[in-house]
Image 1: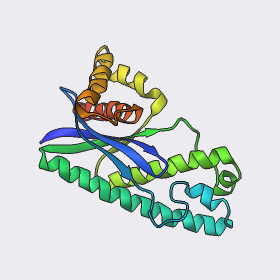
Image 2 (image 1 turned 30 degrees about the horizontal axis):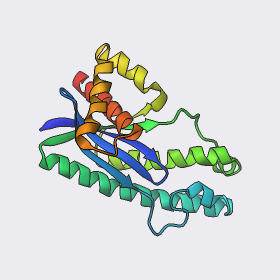
Image 3 (image 1 turned 120 degrees about the vertical axis):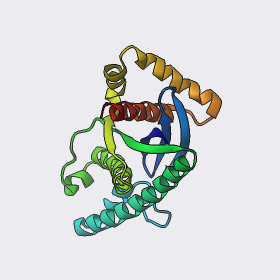
Image 4 (image 1 turned 30 degrees about the vertical axis):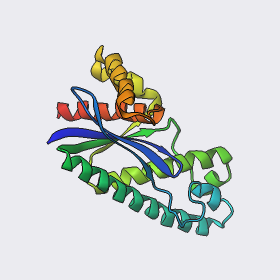
Length: 199
C-alpha cells in the first residue's frame, strides 16, 4: 500500500480533513467531518453553554460532550481509513493544526473569560480528533499553524515553495472547497509523510 497522511484543521464542531500522498503531491481524500453532537445542547460552543452552569455541572457536561465528539471523530476517521485502504493507501500518520495559544488554566478561570472560552473550544475539538486518531492507532502530531511554513522550509528546503504550489494546484482538479483549511492541512500532512520516511 502507498503511504498517505491525514491533515486536520479543526473548527467549532467540525474539521476539514485531507489525506495526502507525496512524490508526487496527490490529495486522495477530502472531507468535512462534523463532531458536534446533533442532540447535544450547546453543540458547536460547549464552553459557552457550560458558562451558565455550576462548576460541577459544567465539568460533567464538558466531560460527557467530549466523549460524544471523540466517538463521532473516531467513527468518521474509521470511514476515511477504510476508504483509503480500499484504494490502496495506508494512513501512516495524522497532523492536527494547533493554535499558538498558551496552556489553558482551570475551568473556573476559563468560564470567567470570553477569550479563553473561545480558545478552550478550539482546543476541545482538536483534542477530540487527536484522541480519535490515537484510538485508531494512527500516529498523531500537532503542528502550530503559525510555524507551518517555517517547518516546511526546514524539512523540504528549496522544495517547500514547489510543494505549496502543488498543493494549491490540487484545487483545480478537485474543485471547491479548496481553501486555507485544505491547503494548510495538506502541507501539515506532507510534513508527517516526510517524518515517516526518516524513521
